[in-house]
Length: 114
Image (cartoon, rainbow, N blue to C red; front, side, top):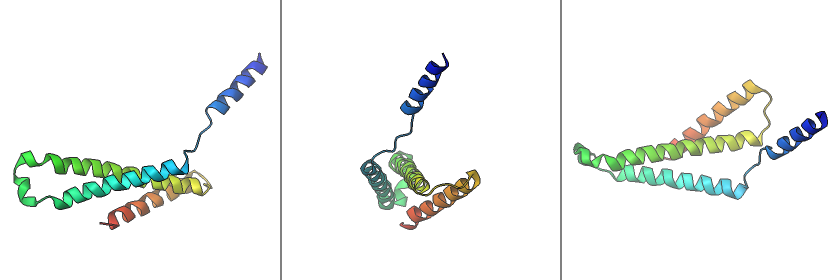
């Protein structure tokens, strides 16, 4: 019985092992998120403040803020995760500090482009 349990545990461990996505997929996702963020920023740049007096005109800028903010946040997380996987972590605290530094650096880089 213990041999069957051991075999089952081995099969589960093998089946549930993490799989890294192909590098091309990560690059394509990153470029898509960057494109969405840039389109949202361009949409907000083109908007005139005088048109904001009418509440009917608020939908497009509100959508641009939500979509651009979400894509930007996903881009920051994606880049920080990639950097975290590239360098081994010494401990939980070191990993958390490095992740926070990476998130801050990527956020500044993304916001600094505008």
